[in-house]
Image (cartoon, rainbow, N blue to C red; front, side, top):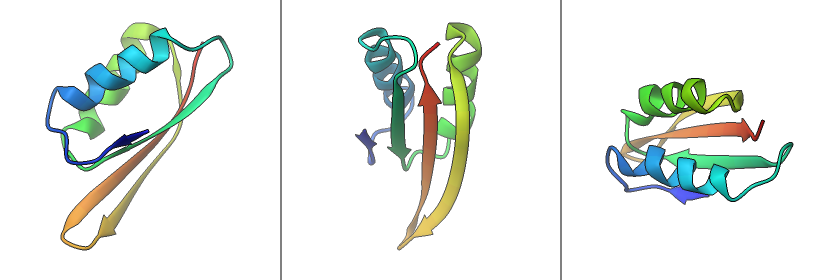
Length: 73
């Protein structure tokens, strides 16, 4: 899911909304450019009980791209 350009708290809110529509075992990949997502999304997953399977940080042109692999519990 492309969350590039969205600022806090929108990336976490969109991930939460997407997770609510999934069934157990589904996987989503969220791409964010907001640096606060590195804190917000793992905190959200601790609250929801869903699993952060992977997190990557890459430099893309002038901004940092954060990619989260999330498995619905």
